[in-house]
Length: 63
Picture 1: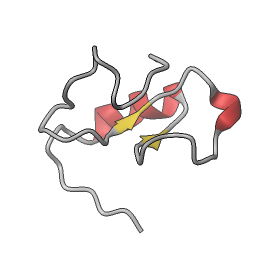
Picture 2 (picture 1 turned 120 degrees about the vertical axis):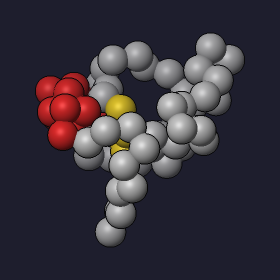
Picture 3 (picture 1 turned 180 degrees about the vertical axis):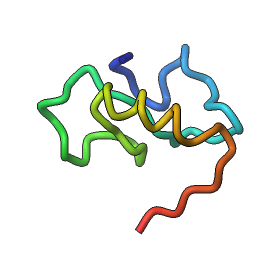
Picture 4 (picture 1 turned 135 degrees about the horizontal axis):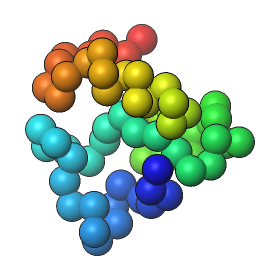
């Protein structure tokens, strides 16, 4: 995982647009927590599973 900000100069866009996404973390000790700019952070093993189950562009409802 890349420990960075959604507004980092080298992370200019997420697939399908926007600056908020689902991603892993290099700091799993901060899960759960509100330390991102609105992204959904998952443990790296969980984001890999999520990637296999949900394709880019799939609508996701957050409740």
